[in-house]
Image 1 (cartoon, rainbow, N blue to C red):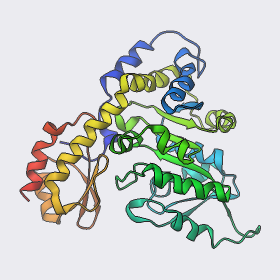
Image 2 (image 1 turned 180 degrees about the horizontal axis):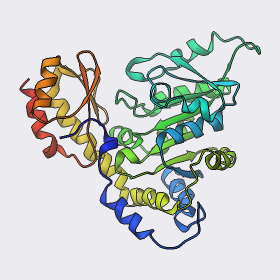
Image 3 (image 1 turned 90 degrees about the vertical axis):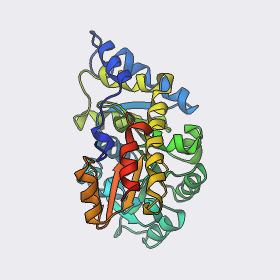
Length: 333
């Protein structure tokens, strides 16, 4: 029973069916009928005109987004626990051709306006120091916490006041939306977000992520960056078809709802072992080495996050009934 990562989950049936449905001749690259529908589909979802581009990985989505917002001589303010800082092998710096990441603090891997100002406020406005060009936040965060619309708006206001772009890493955007119960627009462009990396792989996709540009003009240069980076697949219709299938009938929400429900069931069993509130599909638990070994001996797989702390991640295909054995095992520790 694997709870190591939702990246390891299978592709959902709607995605596999869509890939089969796209298995016909069409125009190559992104000129196909499926790719042509993305702008309209996401414009409907977000209630405003957007440009949408598919890519195959979340790392590429984040790095391409930051390249659209930050010049090589600029910097991006992010949380010191952000995925772009700790888990992308320097891809943001590579895609931006050398931009610097400036690290801020905040509880639960959340940035706050005060934390951002503390980093930006110490930078002189001269050519001897790297100037901030963008802010990047993650929703849900690396510790599974969801930014509310008001929290994003506060950061968006600061970004506009300082002339900074605002990027949202939405690898688990669906899980955050299910928890918040708000319209996707409320926590993105209405709150000041310029570009969203909309994750589908962790939520049942096979190899499909979306870049959503709430300032459509930012997509123009990204078309070239995507090609130059090797992410313009010759048969892009298979990527676009996955995304459209997830949007149809709100499959993306149903999948996230199942994963969040499974995490909530485990949270109830964990009680005061929880390190952070459970607002998406990640749990961080305090357990001893012996307790972790006891769980593994029963066939449960998970990540050793820190000394005395483990991470569990539930997936779209793991409902409350599926996780019941793990919930019982945690409660019995």
